[in-house]
Image (tube, rainbow, N blue to C red; front, side, top):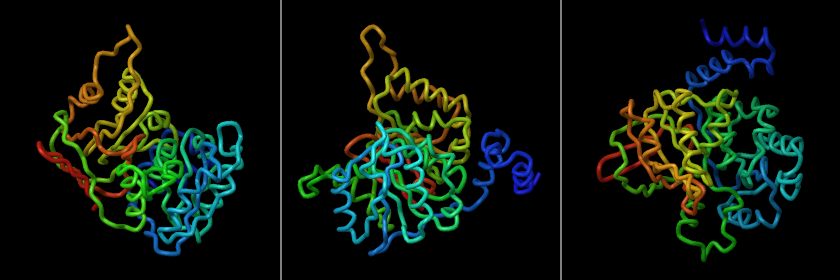
Length: 344
């Protein structure tokens, strides 16, 4: 059946909210997004506006000031969202306040990018109420990581528009001149992504790597968040993609469980490549040792597959957290003595 015909009939029969919860409709939406051409938002130019919003955790105006100054130094015009400085317990305002702020920035054609102020938790509470119709007509860069994986995944599943996985406002150094090299490099990579300037990733070689070459769309983000989105309208299809994952503060047994989720939901089956980024692992409790390393956990799930795999990619909850364009086609090359990832 023609996918567009199928979707129009499903909308008519179920309505939009029911459509989002219907497994067959979710699969059709993902298939339709895959078949559509991936779109890259316009790269930024001097004088462009960049919004700052906090769709997840709470952050103060003082905390975002280093980012505001850096963005201004790049020639951009920061637009401070109404959620900055608001607080509802751990959140940057109530669900409705966060939804309204982010929606206004999605719909404002003069804003060319939205930098999420911080992660934490909260985007899943508002994602189903956000309207991406104007965003589809006028794509803009959505920037962030950690909890922002919800946005990366949802946008990839429904819009097939590129986004940027990177540090956020709470990671900009107060004194850029004296910041550590890894922090400087990470922040500079955001500018390079936004202005479409070429840069290289310094990727270590691991004895656990699996060699090979893959050219495909690159998708991914925080592994725990990806797991939590399984079976929802924000779930991503990994078919014929390069997947990257990172996480922090998890025990090895929990990481093992998450990789079993990837395997059992079929997300590892038809990959073109897999990139294992930074993982900050909690030390096992005494007497409760898991007995496998991160590398062993991953490779155990890949015994049936032959695609390239690399470990230690410089993305994650760490000082060296390089910007990476989700949804954009990349070429991954893994050899015995070198690893490279290049946007195409």
